[in-house]
Length: 453
Ligand SMILES: C[S@@+](CC[C@H](N)C(=O)[O-])C[C@H]1O[C@@H](n2cnc3c(N)ncnc32)[C@H](O)[C@@H]1O
Ligand code: FES
Image 1 (cartoon, rainbow, N blue to C red):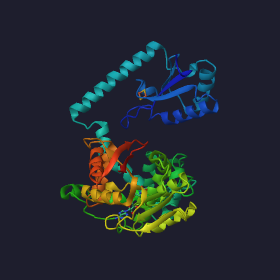
Image 2: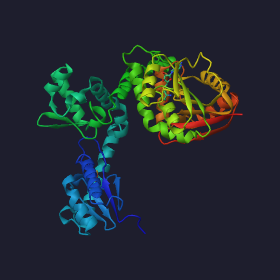
Image 3: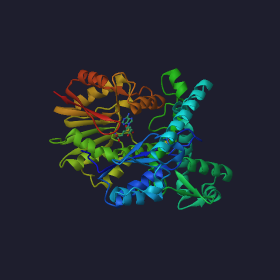
Image 4: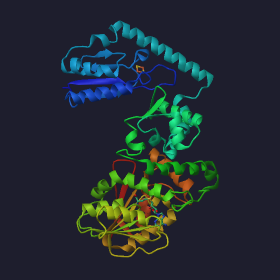
């Protein structure tokens, strides 16, 4: 028996620029309209909508197929969604004007398309053209740079409720011609809309990128802007085996620490309560949060466990930021930030939990061994260490985020990298920990928890 009353497959295939495809014909807008209509007509949980690759009617897109009837619709516009949901899904009546054609006509079109596609592929191969995905990966920096420059200039705030290029340039103090090119490129990327020469933020991006947005991510995204110069030194770092800029969290870029900690804080907003549950805080009274950054995790731990107090050790530039978050959370009496250095200082003693979130990747293996030995000494008998970080596969060639992050640390630190589970287990075992276990978390990082015997 079908678990859903209807199953709609909608093609969202992207193709090389210039080639006809459902995405080029606006399938994303149709998909959004369909989802909106299903929700509005109270049918969202009775209909499964699945995006799919090419259905073979690329010139006719956007295309979709509605099952169990197996009705193919072509040239669907966002404005058609209400009728499809009302007449077909709810009423059982096929929307004849949108039907792709007779069975035979559809088959002929699919066969013709397939032949065309195979011929084009063969011609490309013979000419030695890069496959589309490889070409996109090689050129991906352009899209990234366009977005980073817009973020750096706070362009989305300047666009506001709508502005032409000249107005945006005036607000930003930039060159009008260049600004217009940037605005046009951002529109081509789908992060702005353009009508009659005026640019607008989209409903999808405005909450994150424009001033006053409900989920304002601008301060945190400036951290990614700051990473660009380091990544530009990657080739040299690969030759040398270490960061050639050697910038630390107190590095020379104006605003580095503020943006860095804002990025960490934003990342922790969703993760901290999840981590608090995954670590398990029952019976935990004293926590040491090494390199605790904004304090987001210590705050979440204190909120999850009454009576728990936390000490945060971090660099001098970071402590005032942590203090502000702690005060805002009303936890001034239970979460205590202090200036210190993970490498040089002793950590104290008698803790039930030492927490290391996004710390081990800043270090080389020897630094991690030394840090974990000091963490062991800081724990009361039976206390635990919990490490949150990217954990690589045994061969270290994935997952992708963690493997790329190893290079993020190469370009930014003396010896930092990302590590696999066996490396963590070896360091923890040598430091005297037992009961070493990995806890999988949603997202790119996991936990490794171990106990002092
Ligand atoms: C990647 S952030 C992680 C922040 C926080 N644990 C989190 O997960 O949100 C690394 C933190 O370690 C701090 N840090 C770096 N080197 C340090 C050192 N030598 N001693 C103390 N803290 C340090 C940084 O200032 C920063 O707050
Ligand atoms: S791209 Fe959608 S049918 Fe081919």
